[in-house]
Structures are given as structure tokens and as C-alpha cells.
Amino acid sequence: MKLIGKVEARQGSRILILRCDPAQLPRLYAETVDRKMRPVGRIVDVFGNIRSPFASIVCRRPCDIQPGDKIFAK
Image 1 (cartoon, helix red, strand yellow):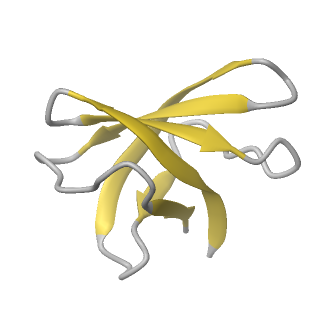
Image 2 (cartoon, one colour):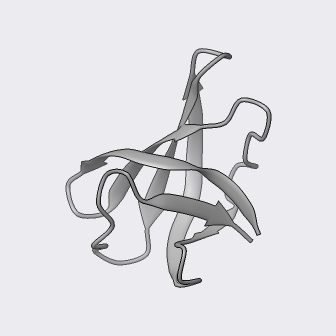
Image 3 (cartoon, helix red, strand yellow):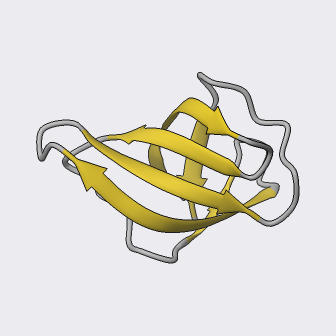
């Protein structure tokens, strides 16, 4: 399990915006899980500055993840 980053914002009920660690950028379309190993969704975009990139995740179903929660890749 690899830490992707922390949730910065939610857009609607199915899109999460994460601030990523620039040394450990996630792969596109990687499956993600929360800290309790529950599936969250897939990474669909990595964007922003090289020093502090962001990633967007589309959740499989409406998610209850709050800003500040950590997200991991399998």
C-alpha cells in the first residue's frame, strides 16, 4: 500500500481532489483505498505544479470521505 496524499476538497458526491507527494506520484487509473482498506475509486487526472501536484479521483459510489483523510493506492 502506497500513500497517495490527503484529500483537499470534494466536488459533488463522487469527485475528490488530493494533494500528492511529488516524490511518489500515483499512476493514472490506479485503484485507491482509504485507511480502512475500503475501495474508493480511480485516479483520473494528475495536474498542477511539479512541486505540489494534485490528483482527482472519481469514486465508485457517493463517498463519505472528508477533507484531511489520507488515500492510498493498492
